[in-house]
Length: 409
Ligand code: GLV
Ligand code: MN
Ligand code: MN
Image (cartoon, rainbow, N blue to C red):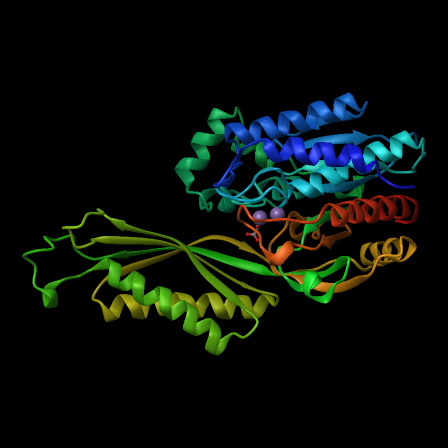
C-alpha cells in the first residue's frame, strides 16, 4: 500500500502557490486572505475526493474518512496551513497534505479500518494570534487566561475573531471528548539539520521543546535628540540593546542546550531626532525540561530588570504564552519505526526543537511525530525545502503507520 505520489505532488505545487510571493516567501499568517484561500482549497480538494469535511467552533478544518464500525474512535492526522510572515512552503502544509493523501489512499484501496481517520488543519499554530490555538481548543486546554494575554495582542485577537465570525465562547467550547480520540500523528519537516547531516530518511520524534514567551517593555523619557545631553537621557533603546545581548550570554553561559530569541524590537516614538521613550520586545526561550524552562524564564526576566536598573528605566515583563515540553507516545513511535522498517527506510530518534500541535495533543491522546529532512536545516524562511523523494517517503510512512495504529491502538 503506497500513496499516489503524482497526486500528492500536484497538491504540493498548487498549495505552495497560495500566498507565495517570489523573493519574499509564503505569507499565510492566520486568517489572511491567502490562509483562508488555502483552507478553502483544502476542503474543496477533500470533497472532490469523496471525503467528508468539518469545521469546528475554533475554525479547525478537517477532512474525514468515517469508519463503517459504529462508535469507532478517531485517529487524527495533520498539522497546520498557516505560516509565519515570510515563511516556506513546507512547514505545516506538508503534514496536512500527507494526511489528506493518506485518507485518499485508504479510500482508494477500499480498506475498511476500525477507526475513523481525520486529516486536520489546526487554526493558528504559528502564533499570529495565540499559537497552537486550534489544538488547545480541540483538547479543551484553552483557558480564558490564555486568551487574555495572547502572543499577537488581545485587541488584535478580538478584532480577528469578530471579523471571522468566531467567538471566545466558541473557542472555549471546541474541546472534544478524549474518549472519542485514539491518537494523533503529525508529519512535519525537521526544520533543523540533523537528518540531512546523518543521511537518515526519517526522524521519529521523542520529545518536543517547551517555550515561554514574553512581551518586554522598557519605559524611559522621549526627549529631543539634539539638545538632551548624553548623561541626562533615559533611553529605552539602551535597555533593549542591553537585554538582547544579556539574553544570548545567559543562555550560552548558563543554559546549554536551551535557546532564546528576541524576534521583534520596536522603539517609540521612532524618529532620528527623538530619544526613544519606549522599547517593546518580543522574547521567547525554549527548553526540553519543564523545570529548566522556568529557571531560564526567571533568569531572563531578572536580566530585564537589571538592564532597566542599569539605564534608569522602568520595565514590564508580560508572559504571553507557555508551552510545556513533552514526550511523545511510545506506541506511536513504535508504529512509525515499524513503518520505516517495512518500507526499507532508515530512521533515527530525535527531539524537536520547534513547537508543534502534537505537543498540545499529547495531553489528551496518544500523540507522535515523524520528521522528513529539511535541506540545509532551513525553516521559517522562503528557502525552506524538502526533496520530493523525502516528501513521498514521509507520506508512505504516515500511511503505513496510520493503518497499523488504526488496527492496534
Ligand atoms: C513553531 O513554528 C514554533 O515556533 O516552534
Ligand atoms: Mn509547523
Ligand atoms: Mn513554524
